[in-house]
Length: 305
View 1: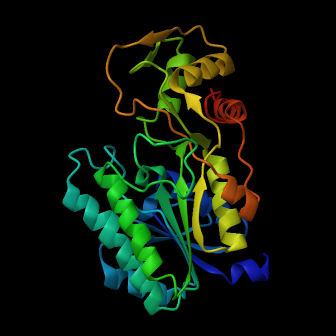
View 2: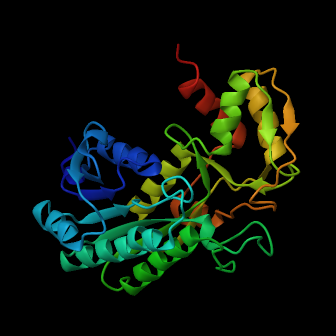
């Protein structure tokens, strides 16, 4: 084991979640000492030391920081839109995402944490965007409770920025193993693998930023190692319409599926993708193309007997 890495005590909140679990595993595989904060110990992966706790309880966080001598925090724990919070209760979203972020920042401050990585989102930007691609200087105007709560977390990070090194990462639309059923990439691949119709809402011309989970992990670890505090987009740097996404998935899976337009409206009827040039320049971030990501996703996760 590399002694230098093992001496860095890292706390990953949301270590059982989609992105958090991948990042915690990647850090542990590089011989960092990783503590994963979850609501259930049973959900932690191998080589990650699991801790059961709730980010809504500041004294619990403070005890964890002190007991395990944490010096670096990756903060992923959050309620996601629709999925974890189907009723979209704004007070629950605030309690977990906003107040929870303030809690962990304060606990980190009280126990001399040196570096803090905050997982934010493209949902902090205005929609529809006034121009694309959307860079870090674009208008901030969240349209959802989720986006507003994540933005408030960014502001808390800024307030603590003089006490520790803080990097805010605004992720694009992430896909890969462990993603939620509502993700378009997962839904389309499942339909394609069954040769079922691939169903599209809206015109199909609406676009987004589809970023493979391994690229998000690589970018997050690069941000950690380079330690250049500030705000960074982490996306694919590639605009893809929903119709084009379906076509690429049909090609990658060699499916006989047909594309069907449901006639139902989409909740994102506009074009959108992130400019990640700042992360490319400062971190050396190099995401895969969509074709490469889908091929790897399909081969790795959907060809098991």
